[in-house]
Amino acid sequence: MRELQLWLRRNNGALLAVGVFIAMFGFYNFNHSAGFSVNVLTTAANKGVLLALVAMAQTVPVLTGGLDLSVGMIFILSNCVASWLVVGTLPEIVLGVLAVLGVGLAGGFINGTIVVFGRLQPIITTLATGAVYYGFALRLRPVPGGDVDGDLGDFMTGQIFDVIPVSILLLLFVVLVIWIPFRRSEIGRGCYAAGSAEGAAYMSGVRLGRSKLAAYVMSGFLAAIAGLLLTFITSSGEASAPSGGNYTLNSIAAVVIGGTSLFGGSGTAIGSIFGAFVLRTISDLLFVFDLPPLWQPLFEGVVLLLAVSLGAVRILRIRNRLEQFG
Image (cartoon, rainbow, N blue to C red; front, side, top):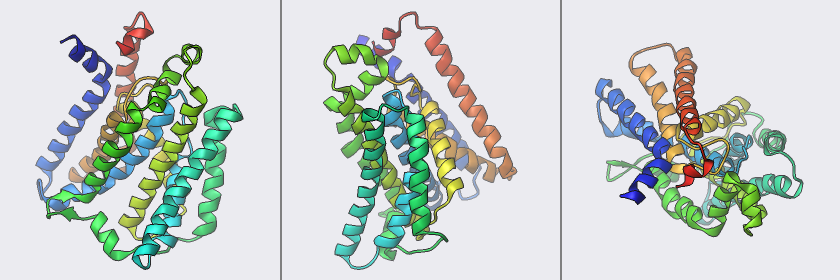
């Protein structure tokens, strides 16, 4: 019982995001003319998973007490690279996918190297590198265009057995194969330690530099996966600065809604995933009730404000910060 109470205390933000999403998505489908149809679920899944992956990419640096403002631009750069390379024969497609993932890893590695060894503030570092990554994307795609393998694109945006959206399976794969092993690894625990009490972690022998570097590399890798999925959905590449900026800001909002502390050391990528789903469902609700799209930032802001307020109340009630971690 004691362990259950501690688990609920550590994950109450994520659980709240799950509950809000279930309520909002159920309300959306109940009022949608097509109801709980496979096509409606697939469309919602494709949009939600894109932001969920970028939100996961944002979560890892936030856990260390940092912030990655370049995730949106790595996402856009990966989309542009994929529109050039993920086409042709099967070996060429595989090499193209690996190249796109390599771009994300390289971008994250550059960010982490500057933050760790250059000892610069993450916000300033990633703001600068994000501009560089956007420059590369613009060089590749000065105008929208490109292509992606049609069969692979149809598969990634379709359903398995005409029931389960493939994008949801991709997200589940990323959580089970990438996030959970990383979270449970020594490096992953080091990310939490760096964000919760960096001085104490250093005195305890935690290799903070390695953990922070790994956090930014993981961030770039997850953003590249999202860029690949965007290419499969749109069958093209576009160096869109507004899109990259929106995904960056929404990823931060999703992290907060999902219960991850911007001070670091507390939270989970699972909560960020459902925070992203909450944000995406807002636009769906506006569509169902035929409300002006300009209302979307208002509702997103209200949800974000409520999430931040709840997090602030939780922190203010804690007399000793160690209570956050049981």
